[in-house]
Image (cartoon, rainbow, N blue to C red; front, top):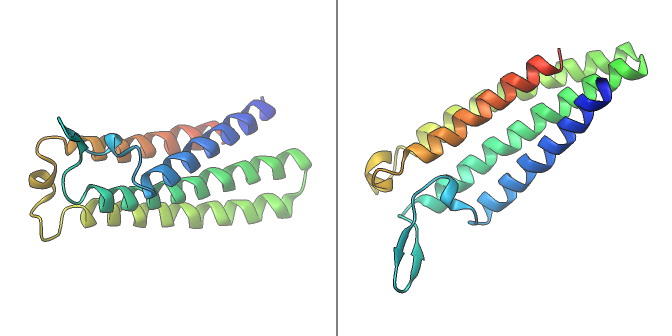
Length: 147
């Protein structure tokens, strides 16, 4: 079961890393905003790229939490109490950082010159909130799995 946990953790590391990179570069913005399709192409509302970068920082923090949980599991498997304790401390720090970045991402996407969050995304604002809520659920499930 321990090996399955580590493999699942590595798969989730790859997924969160891919999300972070793609959102930072401006790709996969359909995950956080509804695109406007016209004859000239697909366009996203103003501020979507900045919101994508904020969400990518949340993914980086999520990556850190998952990585430290994997390190904790590896410390348990190797029988090294010192390594497991260090991983636990780092995991707690990463979890606090995740919470801070999550709150920052929610509030930074709500302010700006373009108006409120809901006005900027014209009814598609639920997408970024669902993505952020999904990271919370993911970390809860992973936390329960690694305990």
